[in-house]
Every structure is written in structure tokens, then in C-alpha cells.
Amino acid sequence: MTTVDRALIAEITARTADDVPLRGVLMPRQPGSPARRRRSATADDLAIVVGHGFTNHVRKPAVMRSLVRLARRAAVFAFDFRGHGRSGGRSTVGDREILDVAAAVSYARRCGFHRVATLGFSMGASIMIRHAALAEPGDRPEAVAAVSGPSRWWIRETAAMRRVHWLLEQPHGRLVAPLVGVRLDRAWEQVPVSPLEAAERIHPTPLLLVHGEQDDYFSPDHARQLHSAAGSRGELWIEPDIRHAETGMTPALVDRMAQWLDGNALKVTRQRQLIKAGTER
Image (tube, rainbow, N blue to C red; front, side, top):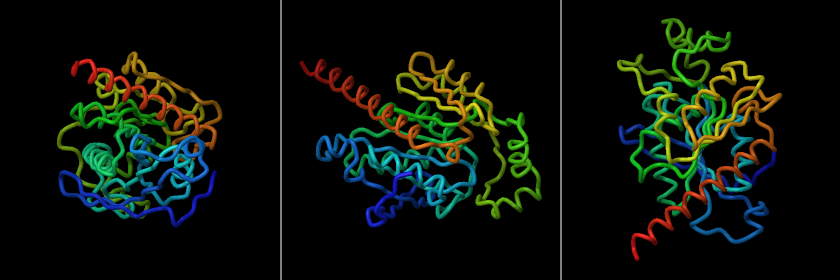
């Protein structure tokens, strides 16, 4: 995918509401991008907060390729989830990671961005849906894209997910987990709201669901179920010849997702402005 000037990538840090230190990167929208050529940057430009998949981190090549491509249209904020990469804490595999997203969205807004969208891959997809549904209305992103995400917990329908559950559930698996890039917390004491339950609550936030027909972790039926749960605010793209999450991305697909997020975040912002103007009359 597109290259980026490394000098423009800023190292950033944040801290979650439960005091977990996060580390990540900020990529300003790139010079020469389609949006940049149309006009100069303003606080009304889009920021996209990106959440990676299980065992990934922001500096993995597949993740970085998508971040760089997204930066053609928007500023990109990407933190390692807790228990991954250079962030602290331990992974709760989609539960308390919504606090990581909340910290990242808040960081982007403090940087002056009025339009903030979120995009998650695999585990990150479930986290972004849950964050948008469970956050207070004023803390929600303007739009959400969820790529290759599960609709529910404890999926064992594929060989890939059976390996993941061995890692999560077996004592030897938990010992091996750091070798594949994740530091695991204790097992859940209480089952979190599932992505499917969260999708039912996501209205009025626009939700894009993207899933590859060749996904070897979760079948496209998961995206179809999430789309049905999201109702009128959901849009579904089932992509032929696309595999799972970050490793399955193409430049054209990333561009389409960025365009969708930009357009839908703008619609939400304009709707809010009209509502505000109406109440002030």
C-alpha cells in the first residue's frame, strides 16, 4: 500500500479510566491525499481511531499498511490494546478494551477533531461495536466500521478459532500467549455484552460491517447477524476473495471504508448542527 513519511508518524500515549497506560501512533492526514488537495486541514476534518485484532499491534506490517492507507483521507489514531504491543495491562479479549477505545476517542477530540470515527479488525471490530453501543451519547464516535468481527463469544466453528480458544482456556495456552504477542488477564468473572447485543443498541450511530467470503476465522454469517441486529443504521459489505481482518485488506477496500466513514460521520455532524440550530431558535 501507500508509503508514508516516517517523520510524520508521532508516538502518542494515553491512560484509560482504569489506569492502563496505552501507547500508539498518530498519523496526520497525508500531504497530497484526495481530501488534502481539496482544502486545507481544519478541526472539522475526520479522525479515525483504529483497533487491531487479537495478538496484533500497531507496528505489525499488515496493521501499518492499513493505517498508512487510511491516512490518505483522515488523521489516524491507533493504540495497542491493553496486553498487546507496547501498551500496559493485560488483555481481557474484548471486555475492558472498550475503555481503551474511550481513551483513544477522547485523545482525538482533545486534539481538536470534531468528527471522530472508529474502525476495528476482528477482536477490534467487536470492541468498536461494544464501545459505540455502551458509551454515553456524547462520548460516541460519529461512525463505526467493523471488519471481520464475531457476532457472539466462544466461537469454535473454525480450526483457527479452536486454536485461539486453546490459548485462552488451557493453562499451557495461557503460558504460551506472550510468545504470540498477548499478555492475558484472568478469565471473565461476568460475561460481557456480546457484539450482537451491542449492535441492537448502536442506533443512531452508523455502522458498517465488512466481512470477507474467504474468512478462515468467522464465517460471513456473523456479519449478516450483526447487520440484522443493527437495523436501519447498519450497512453490510460481503467481500469476495477477502480473507480475515488486517491481512485480508486491499488498498481499494481500505479506501472505500475510509470514504464511507468520512461521508457518514459528516452526515451525523450536519444532523447534530441542524438539531442544535433548531433548538436555539
